[in-house]
Image 1 (tube, rainbow, N blue to C red):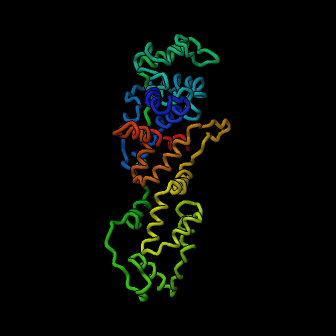
Image 2: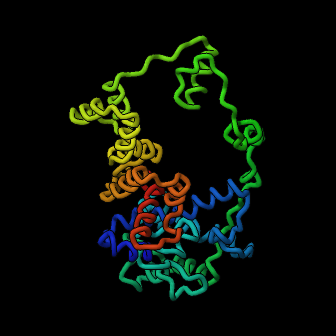
Image 3: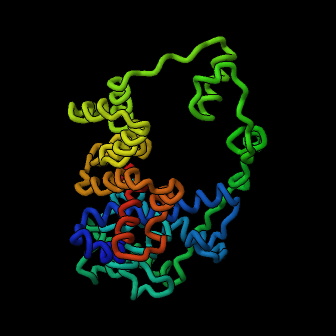
Length: 347
């Protein structure tokens, strides 16, 4: 989180809590992207997860029996995925320790004297850990030896089933319309050739005629402007807007109305909320401690702006999953992409 917090200082005033929120987002980002890649591609080198590639059974046994329980017992309460990760540091995975928190990497494999974790538990550093009760000399020796030996960590074992979709999904890919290649579809023949105004109307009328139904009459202009304004903005039209639309007798009056509503900021506010519901947006953790996110509104505004600017959906997803890793051609774009990763933390 240290590098992220430094980047944030230029555009967020170095706000600590916001940096912590997005620090969490950045840490989760590697895990989410890894899972996504494993699901889609079916394989990923374990080295990409930051796990040790060594397979020394003696050192792994030492880690599992001595190091992992020690970390869990003394550190996980404040520095794990199940907590708010004080200082942005996580010690429940190797990536978290190597990436570190606000003060930089917590461990440097092979160099215990250069590792902040070792300095903290030795009480050589002003940040003394754990704060309530120092570790015993034996416990300090265990962690020191572990770091000196390369900080070996048990490899992540990926089940062979990950990346291979169930058979039912293979069948869906062959049969479901969403996976079929695009083909030109002939406009259906209809009986009432006077009603349709375009090809889409012909498809609608064709189905109605199959059911021996007739389309309802056109709505009057007052009903039309109310319907479309509520639908696109969630708000009623003003009296002035109603009068203007009713008085407009041009053939493209409705098209102009729709364009105006799509261009209004209320459109993004209305439709962005559906994505915020999917993302489970909140302005606090919602847990027993219910810690506030005072800058959560930045992510909310990012979503609203994305809808109002008609951001392509694939770009919208990429920025939220890995915005901190995407290239940016300006500080403004960089800031926007970092804010987008709030998706990983706020939900």
